Length: 395
View: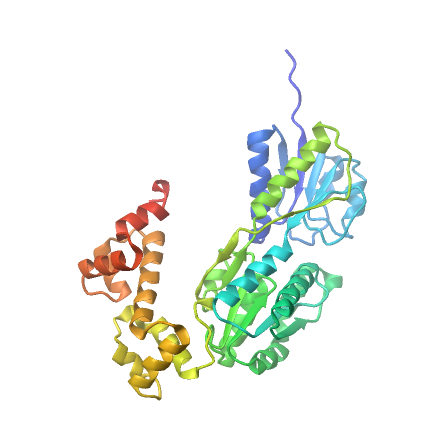
């Protein structure tokens, strides 16, 4: 009995960043559940040339982050190729990408929900993904009648995307001047997490309060970068795994079903916004209220009271309580409780701590008090919340 040989598919996708790793997961899921492909992949960076072994590999198809420096080598293979970088349109090469218009919409809506009415964008000049995200973000701010300030570091495009992103680190002087000139509160959309980390580092060194003066949301939701930022970076989560899966599906159609190659572009919508501390604020131009909110955010889980917050600002407690309610539509006490409950939710989903261990970390002396407040605020007990949000296989 003869058996059909497995088709070889080369994956020229970087694994050095989260987006590339999610692309690879999507392709692997398709291959594991829908085909019998043999996947060929090696560690590489986004701007690397195709490896030398590819020409003699006998592959039947390729999924790649294609650019002008690599397209000629790929065409010589004379096999179907699907592009998941989409910087340029190449003849007879289907493309699958994240929907940058939907990305910009999510970022804009998130900042608007936080109360921002002044906006800014920070990216890299002449970089495809940054240019597209700026284009759509500008459209949304313009449609709403909101001001938009833009800063782009000079492009090092002749040296590739990685060099351009790294060059942003050395552009701290110009970025500092621009950030300090933004009128608080401003909602800032940055083109990706790498740029977001650069912005937050500059803000910290310049003494710019995040998110009180500037609320920052990014793109990619890189689990290695975002939590390391100070404060942790809110970010739009693309469906890169969905992009990889759809790219594999299109490649299979060309390899197996003989679907003709074309230059179509398919866009996959992002999943949503992962909210972290860089946008955990209701924007207000009232500096005393903003100062009080920051104090609450930093100290709520130490068991502070309203009186402690009032001592931290330059106005009377009565004035602060009145202005707080006017600006944020809730009381100082409610803000403290909401911050504590947010911390409890984080600890319930990210740790195995018991309620007794967890209570003092959220500013509560007794687990019974915490449980009562949690049930009152959320409608469920801490145990019910944990069971609903943490699959049993993770516990």
